[in-house]
Length: 150
Ligand code: RB5
Figure 1 (cartoon, rainbow, N blue to C red):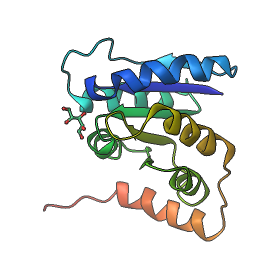
Figure 2 (cartoon, rainbow, N blue to C red):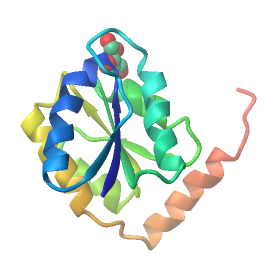
Figure 3 (cartoon, rainbow, N blue to C red):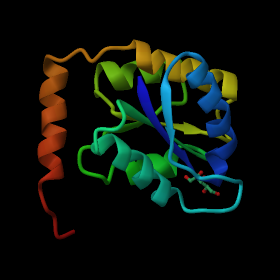
Figure 4 (cartoon, protein in one colour):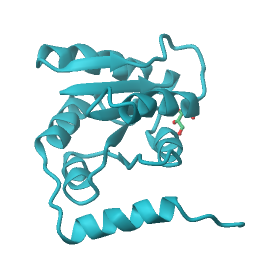
C-alpha cells in the first residue's frame, strides 16, 4: 500500500519507528514530516499528511502526535477526511469496518511502538463493511457540506 505519514514533535519518535517497519513489509511510505523533536503545531502536519491522500498519492494516512487527539481533531476538519483515533487493535479494526476511516491517529506518548505496529496492521487488514455503515458515512459527508453560524 501507499501510506502517507505525518507527526508533530510528540509523535516524531513513533513515526520514525513506523516508517522502517512499514517499508520492511513492502509498503511505500510518504514521510510528510516533521523531521525532528523540535516543537511544531500538529495542525500543520495533519494537513500535510491528509493533503497527500486527497491528492491521490496515498491509500490512507497515519498521523501521530503526543496523544493522537489533537492531530485527529485537526484532520477531521478537512473535508473528505475521516480520521479515527486508535489506541487499541479493536478500535483500529472498527474504524475501518464501520467508519471507513481514511486516516488513523496514534499517540506517540501514550501508545507503545510495538502496539502501534499491531494497530496499523489491524487497520490495514480490516475491510469496510458497507451497508448501514455506508449510509452513515454518507451522512458524515453531507454534514461536511452544511454551514452553521454557531
Ligand atoms: C504537543 O505537546 C501535544 O500537545 C500534541 O502532541 C498532542 O498531544 C495534542 O493533542
